[in-house]
Length: 257
Image (cartoon, rainbow, N blue to C red; front, side):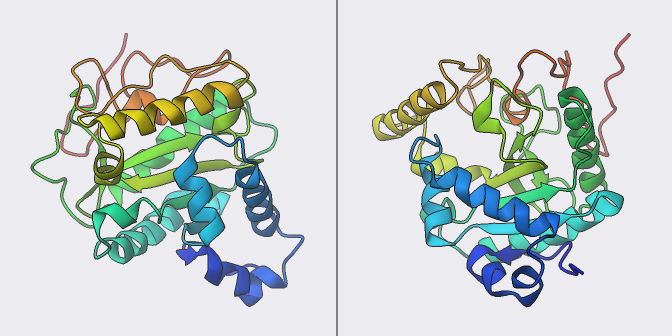
C-alpha cells in the first residue's frame, strides 16, 4: 500500500523509500520509472529537466484520483518551502513533478479539462493571498499562476498527446512546475545567452515532436505572450478555450456565450 500521497519527495529520497521499493507494481512506481526512462532519452527537449533527473534533484508529488487538489496543495506548499531558500540560478535544477492518477480511458480534452479544474481547486487551497505584484488576469502578459506567494510556471503534460510528444510523460497527467523567476534567471529573453538557450530547446522540441512545434510558445512579458496558453498546448482533440479556464478567487470568472 502506498501511503506517500501529498508528500513532496526529492527523487533520490523517493528511490530509497520503502513504500517505493516495495510497491513495484503500484502505479506510482511504474510512473516514476517510465518518467526516468523518458528523460534518459538524449533527444528529450528539456535540457534542464534531463540534468535534474540525472542528478536526482527534482521533486515528486503523487496525487490520488479521489483527492487530487488536496494532495497537490499539501505537497506544493512543502515544495515551495524547500526551494525558496535556494539561490535563483540553482532553482532550475529543482523542478517539481506532480503526477495525477488518471483514468486511462479518458480523452485528451477530458484530461485537459480535469487539469484546469484541479489547478483551480489547488488555488482555492492556497494558504496565502495572491501576490500584489502579479496580475490576477491571465490575459495580462505578466500573469503567472501563484501559490504560497510564489509565481510558478506550470507545464501540463497529458497521456492523450500524440503529436506533442514532448508533453506526454506517461499514462498519467503530469504538472511540471518551476518557480517563474528560474527561467528568467537562466534563460532570460532579454539576454543573448538566454535567447540562445531558448532557441536551442525549441529546436529540440521540434525535433522530438517530428517537426511539430506549438504556435503558443513565447517569451514571458511580451505583449502578445500569455503564459496560460503555454501551460496547455494544443493538437487535434485538445481543448481550445478562447479564454483561460483559470481565474483567481478574487477575480470575476469570464463567462463565454
